[in-house]
Length: 426
Image (cartoon, rainbow, N blue to C red):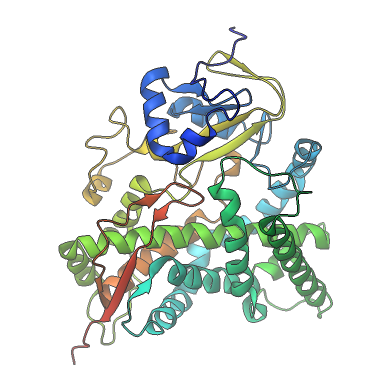
């Protein structure tokens, strides 16, 4: 076994590769992928991989050899703390998994469509920034899933949290927490307010009489046996709320861009959904589902996934140390001609026969930390895609120019659109 680090660009003597990476992230990765191959070093502690087998290996070894990405301001003890959270989190996953399956969430179809209708009707055909609109929709949808009638105020907290995280996702390096920058104070303030709000909701719900039918995910978590602590319930809610907010919103923004650029596809989706009068899109929607899958292939919101080695481990013959980061890149894997024919072409028809090999299609990750809400997200995105095409003509003059922005969750930068209502035929 080779004990050396994988090869990689040397970068600036002081700043390393940070400046070059932040200038054009995807070009940086493509250039050094061509030069160094499927595994290369970014610096002394960070390694990129574009190899689907190694990516699958890393993702399936999460909770054993790796932990998930550490939060902003993670200190020297964060790796140990992340390891200690594995068992409580996996237990929470087992509790909620049965109610997040496709069949279990089908009863939410009407509410998902109603929430989308309300959000888009508020745009009143005006030219709007699409991502905030979709964040509004996703925030209300996931808040209602998790908290039901107690969801008031949660979508606004999710929006504030999303805004507070953006400066950290945009930056290639982090300033220590003790530096009193506005972004640091803002993140801490928003995170504290969110945790306090969820903690109050959990305490209040636990004080209610037992034996009532489950109304939402919070009821499911509170009825677990043996009982989960309030802290564990709060942490689980926070994780599901955040995961069900930014990723679906980014995906829908990309879908809106595709519909704006492909009016024929939008018309076919509208035909699949059926007429507006008296018909609602609750049946299986194979074309809409294929459009979602293809959008997630070309523009995966989680375009990069970080894992942190928690023990000495090997990656394709290279030795990693505890604390080393492995950055897996679904965006490049999804566009690699070794695994996909005509990889840069938007072709929903490929999903009639596509059977991706392990590690080659990763919109929701893989392994033990595979996205808990993947079935919910697919159903939500499929219904939303169908409903948008059924109810609106999407007009977005800057759709072609609104290229994906490679920071945080991948979405078209600055996409603006008008959602023009389709007349109802009587």
